[in-house]
Length: 420
Image 1 (cartoon, one colour):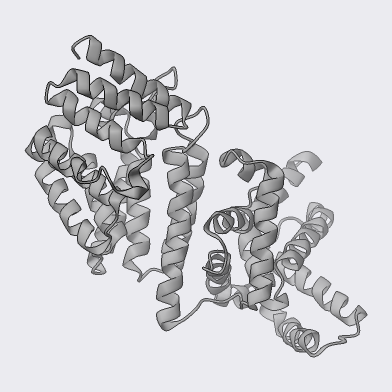
Image 2: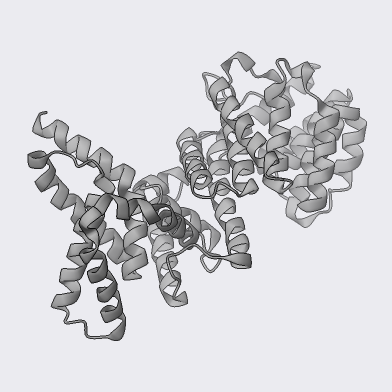
C-alpha cells in the first residue's frame, strides 16, 4: 500500500475510534481538552508506527494504550504535585501493568466510556446550543468550522460555545461516566433532546438558503445508532432512532431540483428510502417491545403511519389524530397542539383544524412562529376561503427565516389568486 493510502487508512480508523478514545481518556484525566490532545498525540504515534507494522487488529486499544503512556509520562514529569494527579497516575499505572491482554481489556468497558462521554457532553449544566456543539465536536468528530457551517453560526461563536461547555464541565466537577438510577433517566432525556435538536436542524433548517441539511441528519442518526447499541434496554432511545430513520427516509423527496420544498402529500413516495424505513420500523418494534409509550416512541408511531401508506390518500389520518391526542397528554406543548390541529384537519375536515388553531392564536410561543399562519392558510385553502388563505400564507412567509420555506409559502399565496 502506498504511503498516502496508508495515511488515509490510518486517519479513517482514527475517525472511527476517536470518540471512544476521547471518552476513555477523559474518564481518566478528568479534562476534555487534555483528552483531545492525548488522542491527537496517539494519532501522531500511529502515523509514525503503523506504516511500518501495519494497522493492529484492535486499533482502538492500541491508540488508547499509546495515549495512556503519554499521560503517564506527563504526570511523572510534573512529579505528581497534587493528590488528584497522584490518584489518576496510580489508576493509569495499574492499567499499564494489566495491559498484557490489551484487546480484551478494552472490550470490557468501551461502551461505558463512550456512553459516559455522551452523557457528559449533554449534561443539563451546559446550555442546549453548547451541548449540541460539544457533542458534535467530541462524539461526532466534526471540526469547529463544520459545526459553524451546519448551524449557520460564525466559527468564533461556535468555538466559544464549546469553550463554555468544557468550562461548565470542569466547574461542575463532572465525572465522565454513565449515571445511575434517577439521575440516568433525567440525563438520558437531555441526551435525546440534543440528538433530536441536531436532527431537526438538518431536517427543517431554521435559517439560511437550504431548507434541509442532510449531513446534520446523518450525524444525528449515527449518534442514535451508537446510543441504541450502548443502551439496548431504553425504549425512548429506540423511539428516537425510529423517528429519525423514518423521517430521514423522506429527505430526497422533500425538495425539488430548484431547492423548493415539496409538501408531504405531494412527495414522490418512490423516492423514499425503503432501507431507512425498514430500519425505522424495526427500531419502533423494539421500542414498543420494551414498553415504549414515551414522546419519541409516539412520534415514531406517527411517522410510521406515513411510511406505511403507499399513496398519500392511504394515510390513516384518524390514527394519526388519535396518536396526537395521546402525545398531548404526555408532552403538552403549543407545537404539539399545532401539529394535532393539522392531523385533525386531515382526519375530520379543515373546519375542525381551524377551530383548534384559532384557540392557539394568543399563545405567546406561537406569536411569531411561521408554521402557525402556514397551517391556518392550508386549512382555509382547503375550505375554499382563498382570500383569507392568501393573507395567512403571506404572513407566514414574512415570519420565516429560511429562504426555501419563504419561496414555498409565497408560491402557495400565489396559488390562491389562481384558484388553487
